[in-house]
Image (tube, rainbow over all chains, first blue to last red; front, side, top):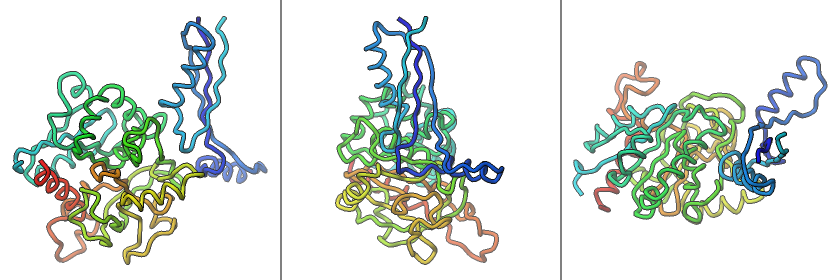
Length: 83
Length: 272
C-alpha cells in the first residue's frame, strides 16, 4: 500500500525562534501588524508499507531518528492512503 | 606508543571544510594523519585502524534537516559497530564546529548515558540570527577531565575564530538546570564565552556570538575522551593565522589552538 506522508517539524513552545522573530520584524516593517511568526519545516513523500498502522509507526520512527531533535522540536504526522 | 606510530583520521564528506588545516596541525606535531572520505571508510577501511578521530568543520550534506544531523545518522547507520568500539576503548574523538554538531546529533555528546539513542542537546540557530564569523575569547573551565585540554591551565583565556550559523548550544527547556548541573558534576564543561578580560559573556552578543545557553562553547563526555567545540582551533594554530599578526611587532610562533592538539597526542602517548 502507498501512503502520502506529510510531516511538520516545529520548535517546541518556549524555545526561541530567531528566524521567526526576524521574519516578524520585517513583516511589521512592511506594514503588517503581526505579533509572532513561527517557522516550521514540512517534509512530504510517498511511503510504501503493508498497512496504515505500519505507515504511522515508520513515520514516527523517521521523526525520532532524523527529522526532529527532541531537545527543541515537536512534530506532527499526517498520513493519507494514496489513491 | 611512540609519537610517530599515532594515526589520526580526519573524516570528511561533501561539505566539510578545514580538514586540510586539521591535518596540517597534526602533521606539525609529528603524528600520522589521513583525511578519509566517509564512503572510503565504509567500503574499504576500518575506523579501528586509527587512534583518534576528528570530525572537522563545514556544512556536511549542506546542513540539510539540521546542521550535522544527516552525517551523524549516516555514521550511526554505517559505522555503528566500529564507532561503538572506538568509544568503548576511550579512543579520542574531536568534533570541531560542524563536527560538534555531528557529535551532539549522534548522541555522543553530552553522553550522559553513553551513546544516547536520541540527541540530548542541540546546536540551534544563532541568536541573533545569521552566519557569524569572528574571533572570540573563550575561558577554560575544565578540571582535567577533558583529555583535549589538559595542557591548558584552568581559567586561561584563549582566542579562536568561530564561523557558523547554528551554534547556540541548548538543552531541552524543562531539563536545562538538571543537565547543566550534570555537566558541572561530571566535569564536562570545557570552555565558556568571555571577553578579553575573562568576564563571562552572560549571553551578550557578540562576546557570546550565538546566544548559547550558559555561554557554553564546548563540552566533553563524562569520560573526557569525546570533545566538541564551536570555534576552530586548527585555524588558530600558527601565529600567521591570527587576525592582528601584521599589527604586532612580535608574536609567539603558535596560536591558542595548538595545546588542544598537543593534549590529545599526550593522552595517546601515555594511554596506549
